[in-house]
Length: 367
Image 1 (tube, helix red, strand yellow):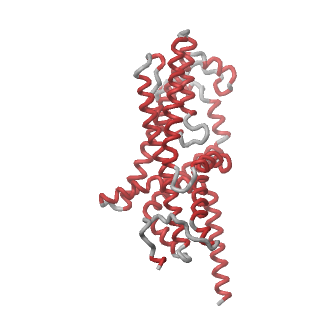
Image 2 (cartoon, one colour; image 1 turned 180 degrees about the horizontal axis):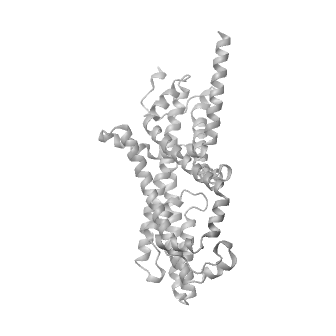
Image 3 (cartoon, one colour; image 1 turned 45 degrees about the vertical axis):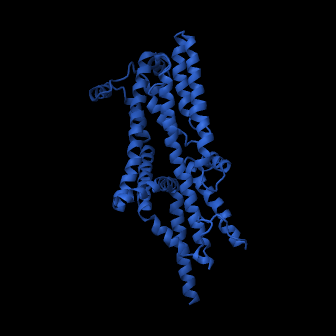
């Protein structure tokens, strides 16, 4: 009997090691999927009031998150290409770049953004240097593109099945209970992760709405020469950028300030720079500082300290890379919840007073 148990334990250890290795290789995709799951779970459950099937609700939630993001990125890319072309046609950028960049050697002007224009430029040999570079690095580019779509596929699939079967996974983990410690910890950790990650999504939405309102309000009060270009898009991008630690929204409104100030400065209308400075004050105070001070404490979770959460957002990307933006807060929430719930019980102390129940309600285990 002991030998059979040892063999079963060895087999279980090997399977666990393989699963852990696979999870490590795709930890970024799994972390993003976990973020999407906890960010959208409340909405998924709210759709249950409409008596929709689980699969329909899960697909609806993912589409409502993915489609706006895809449209936002596409719109941003189109505007970026359009504005870059306008800038290149206004200033002598092509001549300067052609003299210093091998790719652009012999290029006198940008090809027309039509199918016929691109084909004509290709036949004229304007893309030869770029084509040679792509051929030389085809393996690297193919690997990068394949890896991106593979990780995207994992994110979608894992998020989908977590929404559908997350409760079954939770019930399975609760089977390994010992004096209700596991159950209490899992329930507390589940609530804390939802509070933090759902709070992230709410923070993005709130900052985006505040940014759109502030930028449009600014445009209504200033001359046309110093208006914010595409204020709705700028506000939404500001909200998305609020996820990035330290720099955050600055990567949006600081370049916007520069784009507004440079033409005014070179045109000699220095009096308009005061409006640009006013925009910077509005962006820093109204969009960046005040919402962070007011919203952050309410969207930081039930137990996790705001300062610790901010440190997790800062150190996570530094230690783990991009996915650390989501991975570090998850690890912090699990650690803080363990310290509040399971650790006192394991050390022989009393359970945490905050059990998630009303003060006059008791658990069945108390009897």
